[in-house]
Image (cartoon, rainbow, N blue to C red):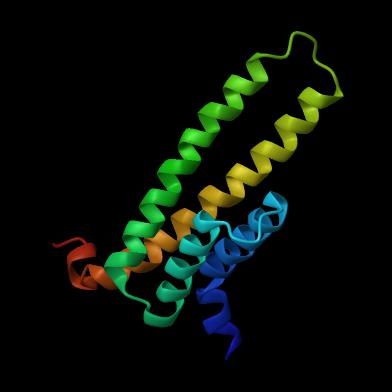
Length: 124
C-alpha cells in the first residue's frame, strides 16, 4: 500500500481507530453498536463505494454537530471556570474538530468521485 493510498484512507482509518477506542472504554466484549459500526467501516474500506461513503460521512458529520451542541450544553453547567471547564473545552473542542475534519474530508473525497468532475467546474 502506497503512502498516497494510506493518506486517502485516513478518515476511514481514523474512524476505525476511534471505534476501537470506544469499544475498549465500554468494557463490554459484545458491544453490538461497535461491532456494527466496525462492520460498516470495514465494508467501506474494502468496497470504496461513493454513495455509501457520502452517506457514512454525512451521518458522522451530523452526529458530531449534535455533539458540539452537547459540549456547549455541558460547558454551560459549570458555575465556576475551574480546570475541569478548560480541560473539557480544550479536549472536547479538539476531538470534535478532528471528527468534523475527518467527516468533511471523507464526504468531499467520495463526493468528487460520485459527481463527474466536469459538472463541478464552472462553465464559461
